[in-house]
Amino acid sequence: MPTLTALPLAWGLLPLHATPADQPPPLTPGRLLTQWDPDWWLVVGLAVPALLYLFGVVVLHRRGTRWPVGRTLSFLVGGIGTATVATVSAIGAYDTVLFSVHMVQHMLLMMMVPLFMALGAPVTLALRTLPARPRGWLLWLLHTPLARVLSFPPLALTLFIATPFALYYSPFYEVSLRSAFWHAFVHLHFVIVGSMLMWPLVGIDPVPGKISHPLRLLMLFLMLPFHAFLGITIMGSGQLIAQDWYLAFNRTWSPSPADDQYLAGAILWGSGDVTALAMLVALFVQWFRASQREARREDRRLDRLDAQQARYDARARTDLQTSAAEFLGSATTRSGTSDEPRAGR
Image 1 (cartoon, rainbow, N blue to C red):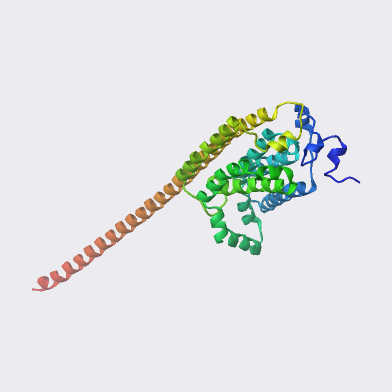
Image 2 (cartoon, rainbow, N blue to C red):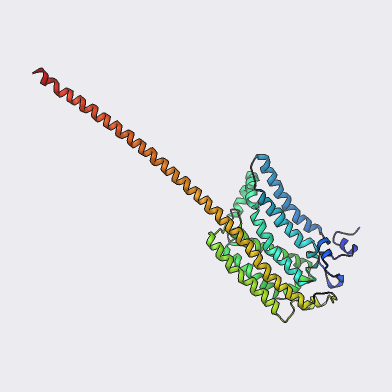
């Protein structure tokens, strides 16, 4: 009985990790929409966090606690859904065949998936639904030195910028194309490095490394030029990246390896700007909501001060009236006492 990995070959499609020996057919629009090559470990890796998240939402619902629908859609559809498309669809099947398809996958896994998962607030959901002991373990983990280091924004930004340069301008990229293990490692690395940046930058969860909104905006603008610079560099390069691997396919269908690399650079340039725009929108929305919450807190603080002042003024008036009454009463008593002897004479 063929395994899940071998099934696509039986159907005339590509396996999850295509090689030149597979003789890939042209990537047509129909194949792009209909080809799905699920491998069991990918299915499990994507299904487990999705089911755990849904379980947490159900637990809160049974308690009568509202969990925002937008967060659920962000994590399940934007995060897990995008990761599924990037790994088990035609994108996952052709990511070793076409550099441009790999670049789409790169941007999805490193930017879009972490962005939507961070907006889904899975850590907050876990803290609200876990029993006491596991919740204590999670809180301990969030306060460990390792968590503070991994969520340190300058380090995350450095790794985020350096990763594509180190990957595409070193022999390791071709190694990842030839090895299924290292290929999966690169995918996981994309998600982890992207998450290290997105959680402190636009995430909702109470993770270490949170910085003020102006500094988040500054980090976002610092990130923008590097994707554009790398994309333009790839577009203008006369040397093919992983040349031996891509030429070994001997493809007779377009695009040519040179055109494909030019397209990959353009995708990196353009999609980086589009994703950064989505991050900018999310950041401004969060900034606006934080300002609104701060304004409401300030209004409540001022209301409490006004109420305290009103109570103080009322007590002061009462004390003053009481003192005045006591003074008048004692004055009347003294006056009456002083008049009695005079009347006796």
